[in-house]
Image (cartoon, rainbow, N blue to C red; front, side):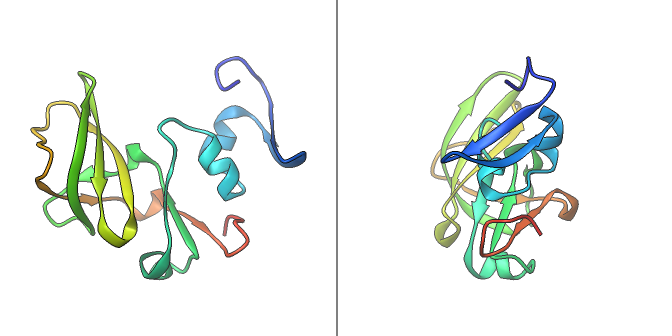
Length: 135
């Protein structure tokens, strides 16, 4: 649908969640459901204290908006690195934050079991309320 449609209707259990141009849904999802449905790999969702720091119940960040940084705020252990040539999908066990997926530069030397820190730009955060609606 993302590659062929001019407009997409995202349904959730028979109810319309959002209607729009594919890239509008990708860049401006109205809800957690749409944010998780559009995009591959899917958006990362973080709850708890980390999300509350950013005035949200749930925080969303797309894998391509994460970067490996020495002083990154998301700290964890590299579980697996899926090397695809020009990019790598890094699957990070981030403790209480859960498993986080990052799409990073394919030339990075990443070894499973090593400590890793991820950072992001604030403009790439998606904030959701307790009803799953975008703030």
